[in-house]
Image (cartoon, rainbow, N blue to C red):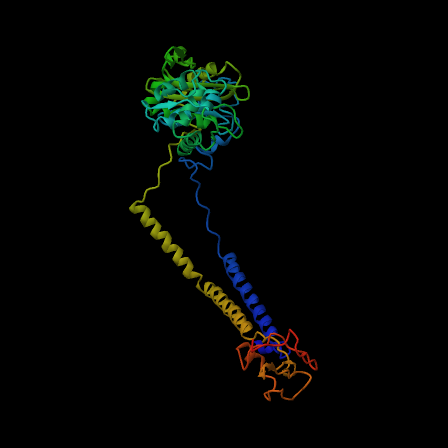
Length: 469
C-alpha cells in the first residue's frame, strides 16, 4: 500500500515515517468512528424506573401528587369536612401508622427548619451516644447564641440530660455538645445527614445541629413528618420529648429549670410529642404528634406567622382525625432505605440480565469485529512506523578523511599529516588514521594539541610535547 504514494515520498526515512504515521492516524480514526456508528445504529436501552420513593408513583418521594405547590387533597363524593384555612407556606398531615398523607401543601418545598431540625439531631444521635456517657462542653458550645442553658466550658454533662434540654427548652448549646460528643462537630453533622439520607429525607441538608439558620440548610414539611415518624419508633426519644419539666444542673451550685415549649402536650387531648421552632428568617415552624382511638397523626408546618403554629397544628389534627379513612391519600410517607442484600432471586435476575447482555453483544458481532480489526491495524501501522523511523535514523555526519590529522608518535613528536598534505602520508608513513580508531584509543595516544599545517613548534618552547601524553 505504501508504494502507491510514489518513490518521491518514500525516498528517505523521514518520508517513510511520515507516511506510516499518517496511515496509522487514519486507521485509528476509523477505529474510533466505527464503534460510534455501530452504537448509534443500535436501539437505545430503556431508562430504568425511578427508585426515589417506595410508592413508585414518580420521581417525587412519596408520590407524584406531592409535587404540587398548592393545597393537595382528594375529597371523596359526599359530605366530608373541608380543610381549615392554614396560614403556612408548607404543611403535611399524615397517618403515622399507615403512612398515608391525607393532605398537604408544598410538601417538598425547601424552607428553613429552625429548631424543628433538633428532632433529626435527636433521632440521629440517640442510637450513637450512651445516655450515661459524659460530654465535655467546649468553647464552641458555650458561646453559641442563644444558648438557653448556659453550659460552662470544660465541664462534663450527662448525655441524657443534654437530650432532655435539647427537646424541651430547645437548648442550642446542648445540640452542639451532643454533636461534638461523637468526636467532633464535623463527625456529628455527618451522622445527622447520613440519617436523613437513610430515612429518604432528601429535601434536608443539615448544617447546624441546632437548626439555627445557616447558608445551604433547608428541609421540607414532608421530611419533618418522616423525622417525627421515626421518633415515634424510639422510646428514648419519646421519653425526652414528653418531659414537661425538671432541673438541669450546670454546676454544683447552679441549676436551670426545664419546661417543655411544646404546649400541644398540655392543651390538646391525645398529644404525644412535638417540637417548635422559630427564627426571624424561618418564621414559626412546628412538628407534632397526637393519638386518638388507636390512630396516630403527624402534622408539620413551615414558615408560619409567629405564635400561630400550635393553633394551626390543632386545626389540621382535628381535620385529620375526622376524615382519616374517608379521603383518598395524596401520597405516602416512605420507610427507611434498606441495605442491598444478595438473594437467590436477585442472583438469578442478574444471571438473566448478563445472558441478555451477552446475546445482544453476540448480535452485534460483525460490527464489533470490524472495530477490533481497525484498531489492530492502526496499532500495527503505528508500531511499524515508529520502528522503521528508528531504524532509518541517519548516522552523524563525519569530517572527510582529508580533514583528519594523524596522531601517531614520531620521535617524541606527533605526526601532523592533514589537509595540508592531501593524499600523502605523514612523517610516520602511516597517513591519517580513522576518527573512529582515535575514539577507540587507536594507534598512538590522542594528542593534547594538534598543530596547524605549516606551523612547526619552536624549539625550547614551554608548549612542546613531553612524552606521549
